[in-house]
Length: 195
Ligand SMILES: Cc1cc2nc3c(=O)[nH]c(=O)nc-3n(C[C@H](O)[C@H](O)[C@H](O)COP(=O)(O)O)c2cc1C
View (cartoon, rainbow, N blue to C red):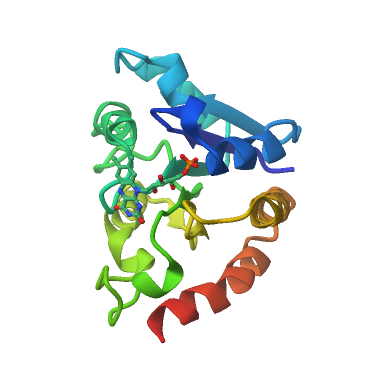
């Protein structure tokens, strides 16, 4: 089985309704490592060697976070800035991550209809996640479609439970080498963003 590293970043987990339950649904899977970045590094003092070793030990990297200001909480950016070093993650001799996969798992306050070119947020989630996609590509990784839970401020408990099961099932597909099936299951969501 492939190993999945969840780089989890929620700066106020005690107030979380959705992400706390998504994480609870996957943390006991034996092919998943949950790396809670705000818990590990409350002062943003990231241990670069530990993080690079974690990356090397996994085939899939999931950046899991609530969507903040059309992007991630600051910790994910700090992690990228420090850990994805030139000559290690990218550049002529930077091949440590080559062939691995990356995706974002996010929750948004905004509803799906808002994340369309004709919606109030004017851009699709895929367009807004372009810096992550391009970062993955620069690091010679394959970027997969995101896992997204929309409308997180109004979602019911039953809908959260269904999203958590879907998250667990999608990660299981990845771990069992079914990345193509994962991508095609996510395709209707991506198409609906464009309509
Ligand atoms: C600082 C901040 C910025 C946010 N920015 C966005 C945003 O750009 N787009 C959006 O849809 N929701 C935004 N939200 C709403 C969060 O995405 C939402 O609170 C989160 O997904 C809820 O997940 P949780 O229950 O795990 O905390 C923002 C929330 C905060 C606190």
